[in-house]
Image (cartoon, rainbow, N blue to C red; front, side, top):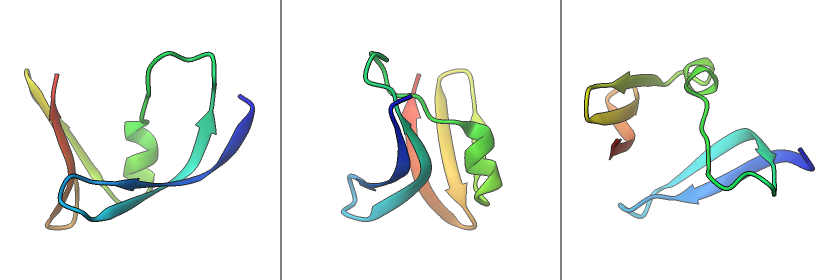
Length: 66
Protein backbone atom coordinates (compact mmCIF):
# COMPACT_ATOMS: atom_id res chain seq x y z
CA UNK A 1 0.00 0.00 0.00
CA UNK A 2 1.56 3.28 -1.11
CA UNK A 3 -1.34 5.60 -0.37
CA UNK A 4 -4.71 5.97 1.32
CA UNK A 5 -7.50 8.49 0.73
CA UNK A 6 -10.87 9.16 -0.87
CA UNK A 7 -11.78 8.74 -4.54
CA UNK A 8 -14.78 10.07 -6.47
CA UNK A 9 -16.11 7.55 -8.99
CA UNK A 10 -18.36 8.71 -11.83
CA UNK A 11 -21.19 6.24 -12.34
CA UNK A 12 -22.86 5.40 -15.67
CA UNK A 13 -25.91 7.49 -14.75
CA UNK A 14 -23.72 10.58 -14.29
CA UNK A 15 -23.81 10.59 -10.48
CA UNK A 16 -20.60 10.50 -8.48
CA UNK A 17 -19.90 8.15 -5.59
CA UNK A 18 -17.32 8.99 -2.93
CA UNK A 19 -15.32 5.96 -1.81
CA UNK A 20 -13.55 6.60 1.50
CA UNK A 21 -10.41 4.99 2.94
CA UNK A 22 -9.31 3.72 -0.48
CA UNK A 23 -5.89 2.05 -0.61
CA UNK A 24 -3.60 2.49 -3.61
CA UNK A 25 -1.72 -0.72 -4.37
CA UNK A 26 0.06 -0.25 -7.73
CA UNK A 27 1.13 -3.89 -7.99
CA UNK A 28 -2.45 -5.17 -7.72
CA UNK A 29 -3.74 -5.95 -11.22
CA UNK A 30 -7.46 -5.77 -10.40
CA UNK A 31 -9.68 -3.39 -8.45
CA UNK A 32 -11.20 -4.71 -5.24
CA UNK A 33 -13.98 -3.27 -3.13
CA UNK A 34 -14.74 -4.25 0.46
CA UNK A 35 -18.34 -5.30 1.17
CA UNK A 36 -17.62 -4.83 4.88
CA UNK A 37 -16.44 -1.26 4.33
CA UNK A 38 -19.55 -0.52 2.26
CA UNK A 39 -21.77 -1.89 5.04
CA UNK A 40 -19.92 0.29 7.56
CA UNK A 41 -20.81 3.26 5.35
CA UNK A 42 -24.53 2.39 5.52
CA UNK A 43 -24.84 0.41 2.30
CA UNK A 44 -26.46 -2.97 1.72
CA UNK A 45 -24.51 -5.41 -0.44
CA UNK A 46 -26.39 -8.25 -2.15
CA UNK A 47 -24.76 -11.11 -4.07
CA UNK A 48 -26.74 -13.64 -6.13
CA UNK A 49 -25.52 -16.54 -8.28
CA UNK A 50 -24.82 -14.25 -11.25
CA UNK A 51 -24.99 -10.63 -10.08
CA UNK A 52 -24.31 -8.16 -7.28
CA UNK A 53 -25.92 -4.91 -6.12
CA UNK A 54 -25.04 -2.14 -3.66
CA UNK A 55 -27.86 0.00 -2.27
CA UNK A 56 -27.98 2.88 0.17
CA UNK A 57 -31.55 3.27 1.36
CA UNK A 58 -33.77 3.11 -1.72
CA UNK A 59 -30.95 4.20 -4.07
CA UNK A 60 -29.11 1.57 -6.13
CA UNK A 61 -25.52 2.81 -5.94
CA UNK A 62 -23.86 0.13 -8.08
CA UNK A 63 -24.63 -3.19 -9.72
CA UNK A 64 -22.96 -5.68 -11.95
CA UNK A 65 -22.68 -9.25 -13.18
CA UNK A 66 -20.17 -11.83 -12.01
